[in-house]
Length: 482
Figure 1 (cartoon, helix red, strand yellow):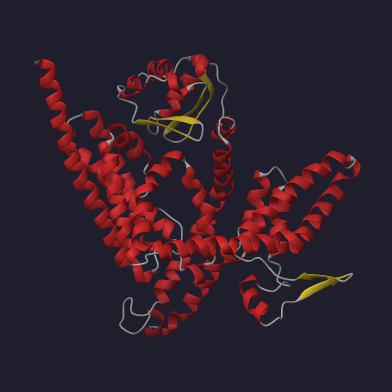
Figure 2 (spheres, one colour):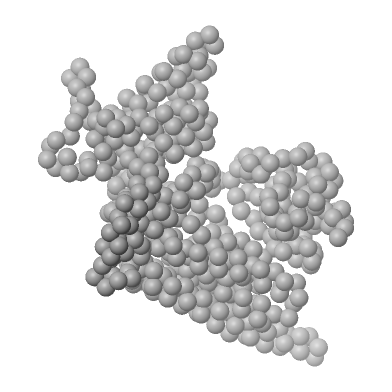
């Protein structure tokens, strides 16, 4: 394979050297920031055997080449376009300047929550294992595994402790990540998070009950009463507090003499932010977060199957815009408050969409005669079933259009079914077949049936649309021949 030739062909197709503002690569894709994406020769890229697909998101034009190939092509592309070696985060920074305010807000949420997803996934999956051990009637009628095997009780308790840690101390994770994103010292952000879940404070989960009994402890400072309440499992309060902390810190560093900076700036930043958090920011954002969670749960419970169908129909188009990254913050709140919410329905809808995308791609594999598309569809279809849809969606379904229609119809029907049975996830993870372990034990069977429905409908509709598309193509060719 002539990587230098491929790099030259790609560079010509994307508009030449002067159209490249920044370039990097990840494991499988070239990540490019272009001056003008409208001048890209998409047909030329599609006709290249090495190109598995292209898509544009978050201000980046991405070309899927595959592992092993992408790094070699990038080396020559960077040289030809005069770009210095850049990381994907560098390219993200350049790309963010092209985004509108809404896109920047979504990207900000993504930057904050994506790094902490592994901790939430680990905690959630452990919670799922605990549920499997303690849920009655799952394997034994009238009993849980722990009831039938008392020697497993401490194991379940141990797993439950491990599972709760990430959610109980969630403000520490978010404080670190958010403060770093807002330009402050992440360790001060973590300290702020620790302050918000300090054991001397009333546990945030028990705040409602204490409020009803008028037993909320307070600090009485010169006549001002400040509630001594923690913020375990919350999202909005620590996000707002982290933003304030970062801005106070950066402002202080501009005015505090360098000789006193290391002493005064951390002290004043934590003290001022802490006071604001417990007196104003925390109570307001806690209420806002509760309203948001209650509103989402109410919307899900009220709209029922119709809401599930609409969300399932729109999920993939939302992914195209990149707006789905904003769901991470909402899901984190739903999972943190799992006792009230029962878990996240968003994860389940995402899984139905991913399964449907995979099914549509595999239907293309069955019907197409194009060798290149077959090669892409085989791997991309399986990948989508496992929860990674980019190759399927951007490399096959959107390119051919009719598979994407089949996929969103399958997603809508599958989502409607799982909504009827109130299927919810107690963890984040791979939204697809592996997501079974993330699902609440009493709804696992409904989740599996939903995946089968989404797959079957998407596959069938795509086959039908493929035949119709083929007939249209034959008519067009016969008409041109006449």
